[in-house]
Image (cartoon, rainbow, N blue to C red; front, top):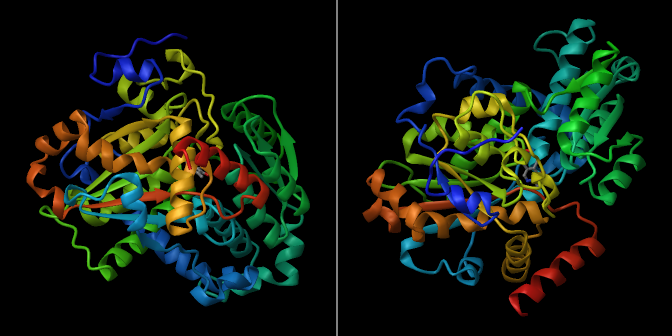
Length: 442
Ligand SMILES: *Cc1c(COP(=O)(O)O)cnc(C)c1O
């Protein structure tokens, strides 16, 4: 298939694989209340309640969560030395923060918010159905003998470029499920090895992410003992991620940040298939409404959300359809075709999408580490382009003008969502740093 993208100021740069900012013409005031969306804002609160219910079980399965009472949370770090290194020292950049999901416990990436949630909720429902857990009863029975014996007869499967596989595999094995992870060719060897050590069966495909997911789906359809975590369609994943919004809102409040019409909040979220950034953005729009401005960020060769949403087509448009390669070092974002479900939900909510070159990812990775000891994998650094695009680029200025924000820049808050890194082996991380240092000239 070959697709013609509509006339748009960003189109030529996107097609040429150059960094660009695309503004979403579908963004609506009070978009969260848009009729006809397949989800409701009340589902965010339900997910928060579910996470709370799971907390004692999570703490039992993952002792590293004890200090946080069984909650899987990350810090919000104000970028001080880092903002200077990035060139964001001017008052026009307001305050700049990093939401450090790269340090998330259990899975070492933002996927801990989605994959762990879906696996644990699946286990909870299965245990309730079998009478092992009574409604409202003590969830720690799921870590007991009887529940483990049940889970051992069931399999959880997923397709992944790496991190979702890690999160689902770790969660499934912690409860005693069998786990099968279908990995795309982009998957890094260390992620495969880590899963194999946990007793997860890894099936490697010499193909892209979409194909890996397809294989996992077909296997699961043929066997009722396999539960398939469907990254392309799962609302469970989406709402697991969405609960991050309440956590961020509390942290902003504690940092003395006001978010309202006079004090806009800009959020920059690395996007692969769209579930993680979509869920977090949805949760933030549910809390802050039009005061929150959510942007996705993608690699220049893998801008699947950008090209699909820009196309305006009903049928999914992939990056291949417009002549891009889907080749990137940012394995967490090496996705050629976004989730149709997420596209539909984000249509009235997303402010825009920008793209970044791989070299910049390594430069920012090095800067984040050398200034504030923030440990990232390449995908996770993508959001650092956000403040520059919004505050200083012609399209960003158009956006600010259209939303009456030109004179509010100094009162704004920018949150760069960093999405993975804690589990990267030291040797691999040193290689990332070397590549970044060479690019910075350090
Ligand atoms: C998965 C992932 C993303 C993107 O999440 P999607 O749900 O695929 O859009 C971004 N960064 C990292 C590090 C990831 O693992």
